Length: 253
Image 1 (cartoon, rainbow, N blue to C red):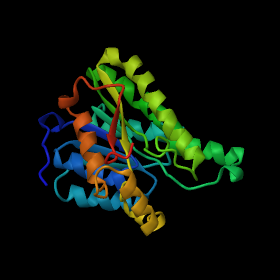
Image 2 (image 1 turned 120 degrees about the vertical axis):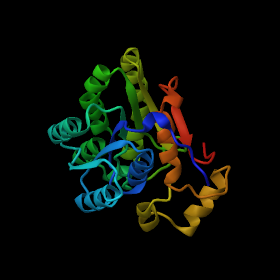
Image 3 (image 1 turned 120 degrees about the horizontal axis):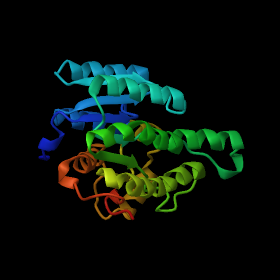
């Protein structure tokens, strides 16, 4: 399969959260192929350093900051380091999240707050950290990751789906507030993406059979596909795209 090259991303400063593995790592690699300047944040230090060393050896301008995004002061410091190194972000990809399963009966206030911090709160404060530099630079693109889970009424992880549903409201509000500065804000909605984590923890023959029934397309969704959507939304080709959802779910919804 042959994919597009976006000249507007050549040399662009791109910040990515949760870039050490899964969809995030695929996004990092996709921007590396576009010759972008990449900074990513993750609390998986081992995989973060491994990916950085691999791409840097191939000539990619890439920087990794170890950070637990639930710690807002630490995340602010991490974004400041990226800005000092790479310059103001042209692109922010709010990807970091964890879809841990849980039953509603077992949720405590403490668990609820931790899940919101893991899957929603850091996105808001990442935008808050990065937007001033984008404004000063004259514009940019912010891409938040939602989830197909709440659209299809998936059970067994109600705080996760609550977090992901809220991202759509956050996207549309920021699109209105930042639009006058030529900053576009969109949501990518992935379906069931076949990351290594999904394969290890959740994929079963029964689950795959159900996915095939729900999807219009028969193929499983590789992480490369949401990454390609991110590239489009980050590029000048998407200059008039904002405040919307971009589905990569093989027709599940």
